[in-house]
Amino acid sequence: MSAQQAISGEAILLRDDHDGVATLTLNRPAQFNALSEEMLTALQGALDELKEDKAVRCVVLAASGRAFCAGHDLKQMRANPRQDYYETLFAQCSQVMQGIVNLPVPVIARVHGMATAAGCQLVASCDLAVAAESATFAVSGINVGLFCSTPAVALSRNVSPKHAFDMLVTGRFISSAEALSFGLINRVAPDAELDRAVAALTAEICAKSPVAVRTGKAMFSRQRSMSLEAAYAYAGNVMACNMMAEDAAEGIDAFIEKRKPVWKGR
Image 1 (cartoon, one colour):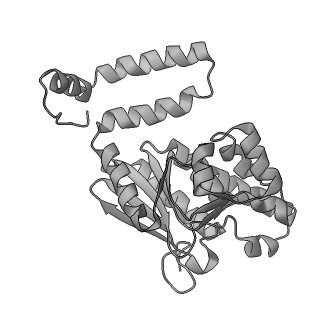
Image 2: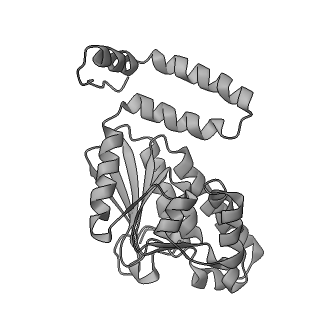
């Protein structure tokens, strides 16, 4: 049995492709989609495949069952009480989170139920996030004597330092409305309309030039760590290169001619 198979034989990570959108679904509902070693391995494999898939325009990260993701598999962690094991596990998880950031196309978290600890880290690592009104978020390791240090990396890059540290040091759950106000998520939808809201966002992205979107994701991520001067120099070069793409010429001509552009993906 492969690492991507649950004990029952059912895949613990599902992939569905439709109209340029690849949906990855965490599928350990009985464990609230906890990030076991096997789940992290499956996610890494899927990200590696998606990175090379030119047909994919956007990725949705979803989950089955009653929750988005409850974080790391604590039972599995307690069954391996060794520092070297934990260092390897957290390095594996960090690689997955960076894989999401480094994917050439936008990744959207579709959040329902709860997203806690490394599950909240997953949301923060995605480029965009749409949540159901009833969804809740927390980095609650502090409640079991563990400060969520690795989730803090992604969280602190999404929300203000005071909001991030408040969540990390209290472990309190916040609502989707608070998560929206903090900047952790982009949109909130009524529970029954969550899929429709996600579909609307993916449609918006897929309607744009794939060249511009891929260029933009890479540029946006990289410039954040630069000084202002270096960021402008880098951005100017990227924009000049983008202007040389066929899609940019087509888009500008279509705007001038008052028609819809026909993207070539070049």
